[in-house]
Image 1: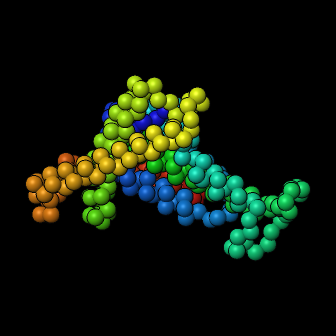
Image 2 (image 1 turned 60 degrees about the vertical axis):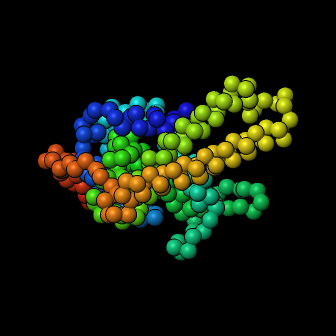
Length: 268
């Protein structure tokens, strides 16, 4: 199972990709996503171009020295969200397609498939895969704190980065609270999958755990806000980050990546 601590542990490794400036990595991922989304919905070269982009990012994963099992587990955990949307596309007839070619397959309940729907569903799934690969690569090679700092320094609205920074800080705190509750339940031999106890009692215990987390989060929020006021929150100096300069190798990486995308688009 991949936990929050696993995600942060991977980002502390030392590799050429980890040492890139967080702003460069964030701009790189945004460029990948914008390029992938801007590709035509249905085009004969879509799959080849997406495969080339995916291959490039997998090479970056190898250069970063990431745990491949951990990396692909994270992708597989997110993939079903896009897979569910892509699977229904062959049975739909979007308005942006004028002419449809029926697929010669007899299906129950009066369902029918089209070649255009299959092409659109395949392209949609491939785009989703490339985008989540880029996002997982970013989160695996960049510390969450540095990611928020990079977003703030490239001009993301201050309100958004402030909320994101608070979420990053206390996400791990509430994960620790949940872990303590689970340990306490295990010491009392509580097992949610135990069929020897009434299901109603199990549901009640799960509800009690959720209530405990809610109450603790509310109390923690009150203490956190008081601490923020004591430290000058609202004075305009809420965030203090390490100031780093973009180096030559960072710029070269961004230029080479952009050139590769341009080459894919023009010559593939």
